[in-house]
Image 1 (cartoon, rainbow over the protein chains, first blue to last red):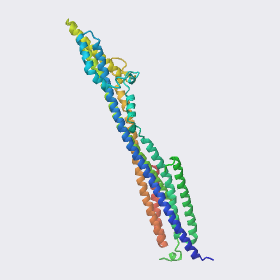
Image 2 (image 1 turned 180 degrees about the horizontal axis):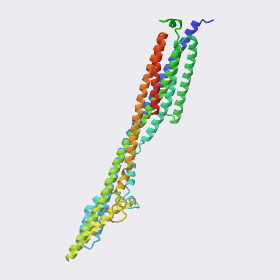
Image 3 (image 1 turned 30 degrees about the vertical axis):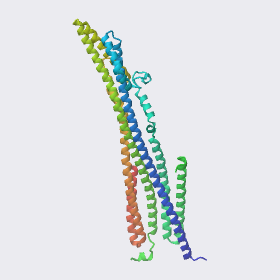
Length: 224
Length: 226
């Protein structure tokens, strides 16, 4: 029959091996939890950069759209005055109008294109459709305007959500490490009870962590 | 060493064990709360910065738009006044029997009026029913126009401020949770010492640990409620 002292020594070795295994799992779970926060932070950083780039492009497009609208307005206003001048009975005024049409108007017209030349840019109310021109400019700079910071933020949120759940698993594993350590220091009778408790908590923590990892792996479409 | 210490050296160890278990559970819970607060602070910080970027864009857009709209309206006013002045002067030349002057100024008035008509049709302030004047005698509703123009920017500022406040609130909570965790770590130390010393001193260390744990619990509850 095995002596209690030998039995105790053998149990101590097994507990030590368990402690090493749980310590390794704790380190791995802590690393994964921290790396999830880091991934989320990177995505937020990327999203904010994209937001700034996209907004800068939109700002430039709005500036250009209203600048072109200003040119178009000046052209159309001058053109209507010129038409009255051309239709007058005064020959001097007609000649003046002809000179303006030859030398002034082409330059104004080139600046006013397309808003001042294409009737499709006039709204039913009569004003220039600057929004339409802005949309066209945005389409032209699609490499910047198509940047989607909200997609990065949404992806960051999934990493944060996973981090939240994984923290619970990490805590359970850490708690089990504490109990295993305590069992190593305790006497034989209470040692087994504490050891069982530690192994049980570790099992729950491990299953929880792996489950969380699996669920979010599926939710992100196969991305870790 | 007193007699009871010698007769029962394990006295109070169960209490220390229970306290250690309680402290472990508390640390686990506060750690989870701390991570949650940090995540919320990060998200609010992100939202705050995103709204700030959008706000600058909104300001630039409204600036460009109001510049265009008010310049168009100003063009309408200038040409209308020029047309009126030319028309009055033409009438004066007619009264002075200056037919050539009358015809030249009448033409000038017609040119300005044509320009004014076009500026009026292009003016958002004169064509949009929300701001257009009901008659020629009144001005467009510029106050309503400016109010509507800036409403989106103001909305963004409000969102940005709210997000910024949320960031500070959660960040402060996160910092406080770290302080609570530090206190609970001290409680761990006290319980460890209590486990090692003589039974008579064990109770003293345990009561110190109970005090520290109580403060930690109270602080956590305050953070959860407020």
